Image (cartoon, rainbow over all chains, first blue to last red):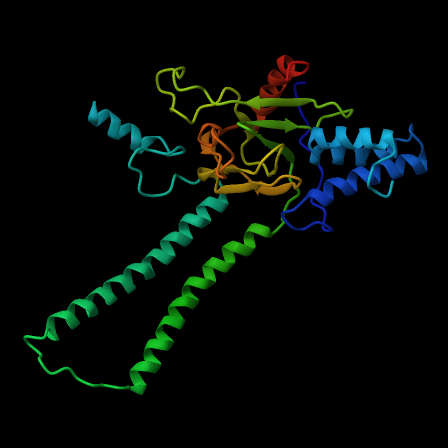
Length: 77
Length: 260
């Protein structure tokens, strides 16, 4: 990897404050809702995936993935 | 030797705590420079007020000493002076408030989208850094732990209680978003030279933005009591030229994936 393109989740005007927990959660939900709407293979949802991976700690993502598998995810998927 | 040390201190910027240090560490971000400038502005008025109050106090004690002035005066009010000593402090406060609010609100301004997001996750008693902008799947692409170098181990020239094994490498002059959170108890990610102190609150992601203006190595320490080794989980940020950033991160990628 010689050149890394420097790009990350942009600042979201819906979450202007210091607390970005909701931003990370919203991006995660947006990704899964996009996949539910457009299908797994659609490339449109990749954008949301990149955003939530940038913002959310790995542990949070793992926990949510488990909760989704168990059907206990506390969010509007 | 002392002469050489003096020269060293004037040439090298102060990016870590120095023994008997009085002032701030040298600024490496516009935010910290703003804080230092505000401090100078306020300090000017502080000295003014200090000298004035001390002078009045000394004068009063001298001239109204009971031997020199046995009968005390019984002044009840003086309208003019009361108006003056209300108006003048208000004006001084205004002069202090204007740069202070300007700096405070400039902190929150989002001018440019950040280029990189780095997550600083506090544990008892070390930091984990995640650089996940390059992930193609949910597995972390670059995650590493940053432990302090124990007191017996540092090499010659290293700072005791400030050095870590893996530093946070960032490119200079780039807008960074740092997301701070802990995995267990509250911590706080603080680097004085960069003017950043961001609490790590369990269950919450706190965001702070910085843009390091010069290359260098910047030291900080955990700033929220988190248990017995709270004093032994420092933070070291290394700012490298933008063109070197890619290779530095890839070098860390290769040994760390599968290991961290």
